[in-house]
View 1 (cartoon, rainbow, N blue to C red):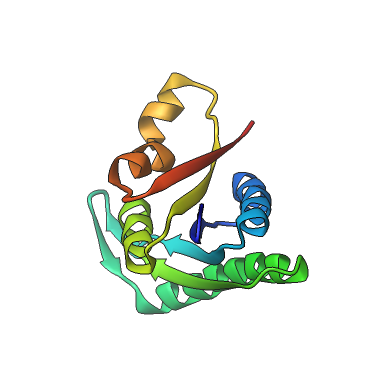
View 2: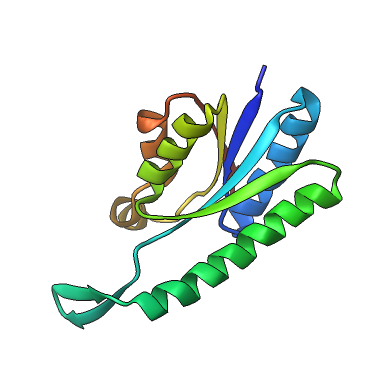
Length: 145
């Protein structure tokens, strides 16, 4: 049974669907819920191959990610589930896997939207696919179209 569930949450349509599925699983298994929003490191582009860290831009983005995360936690609370949330900065796969190990998660839930063309899939890559390789627990990929 799942005792601790980690939901990678970004507020997108796949993320919303993952939230609903996570709610159902958590309610059924009476699990602890943790939501994580992974914010990429914010750089200001100064040339075609370089950028510089911009702390003021980073703080603004962190506020936006925190608001998205708070909305997800609130939706779960409105449905009668206790959840906590955390915004982290870095590579999505690395940070989700790291958080799952830290909280000793039994399940990671992540949303996924199929991309239309092969070029889009190749260029963008897949967080959910890479996460399966790096996670220390089961991964539920919730697919939307």
